Length: 173
Image (cartoon, rainbow, N blue to C red):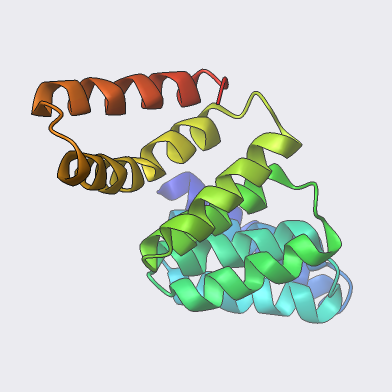
């Protein structure tokens, strides 16, 4: 923590010299404070950075991600959507929006966001895994409906679900 405290002091010193022109310093101070577990101070730094540079995508992302981590999911989702309105190709923002929506219980919205993340970056392993895992409840519901309409064995339904996950995780669905 000593190194992080030193970094925070250095960013504060830079901000004191030029308080109205260093959005990057406010953003970086926010990142350091986040690492130190001082979330509310970090959010305040992100807000200051955005006051200086409203289109600072990195700061919007950092603030939205911290809001999601703090359980402020609706605020995070709104921030990610606002960011994606101007940076629709930002795979990380789609992925994090998916995580926020998943936390809010919106499985279909989460899957759509993970899918957009993969469209922006087909090699995004975390998004591929999240997309596959977000389908487990949907697959289970489909299997339950299928079981009610036909007499499929439970092991056959489990195999079907696992195979669907594997195929999706490999990017073939």
